[in-house]
Length: 161
Image 1 (cartoon, rainbow, N blue to C red):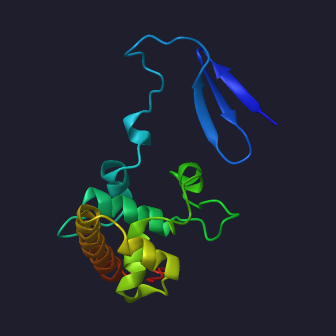
Image 2: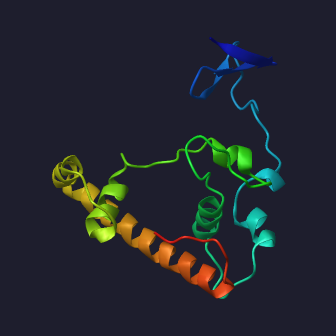
């Protein structure tokens, strides 16, 4: 069943498992389609007032990652408890098993990796493996910084995988 809501020249559809934004008429180039107030954006500037300060400061990626981790819905059928960004967080993907970074993370001892994941990593082009290893390095340093922040702030009910 297709449901929708028309707003000027746009129609928002939601069919079962997702949302889509479609133009129902020709729209001139440079036309503003959607305007979000800056205070409604999920970023380090909007999150910082809700967390204790730290030295060194958390980076933008670390702040957003921390917030998403703390307010991730506990299971696939539940909603985020975040009063600020819960509806947004609730529609984000819950798993990233098909992303090569997840496979590499598993390879480095965090979890059991499937045979298919091993085979897929083995056939990635060299330049992709280089970028993936760089991404993994950034991920691990960000993850360490977030864990250090949480330990220093003694944030209760926080689980580290």
